[in-house]
Length: 117
Length: 112
View 1 (cartoon, rainbow over the protein chains, first blue to last red):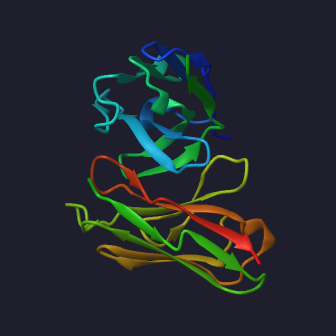
View 2 (cartoon, rainbow over the protein chains, first blue to last red):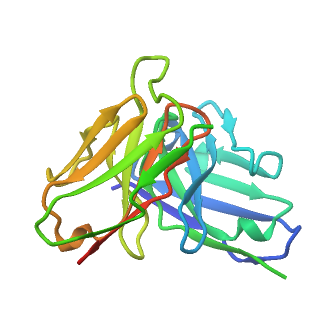
């Protein structure tokens, strides 16, 4: 059974940093692209980063230069380093397994990030 | 960026009746390889999103056949042939043909 378990969400200060983790199991992690998607309370879904099997990374303009996605295949783990946090980064962050860059077929339960002073 | 526009925003439906959700893209979703990567997700209250449909019309394993997807180019539709109580939630379309990946704003399906 595929499992994706996010952790690291907490209260952070504006301008601060936070690192999220996603522990994957039940599939060959190194063979899949992986992504982060966020959802502010009561709002829709927003893709925030993706990483290919070769380590190539992708970001939308809203987080480019502030967020860094990475992976550690030996640990079946995905990470999201978030710097220069803003109030508008407050959201539940989901880890999702990619079908290349075309789809997201498995999702974790999410971890809540709150940016507030 | 491909802007995805869903309608309606809210969809009250009587149990057993059909429902239809529209998703329109600001640009063609035909990928350079000829495929069209349009996905539909269901998010039940308090749960994570779950993929229902990929590549316009391919149902995921375990998805009831009352869910169907159709469309081409820039216009796509998700249909539920007979709505059941467990179908309550928010439905999102998402395109995977162009970077960045983008989602529609969501359609909330509720029972009348």
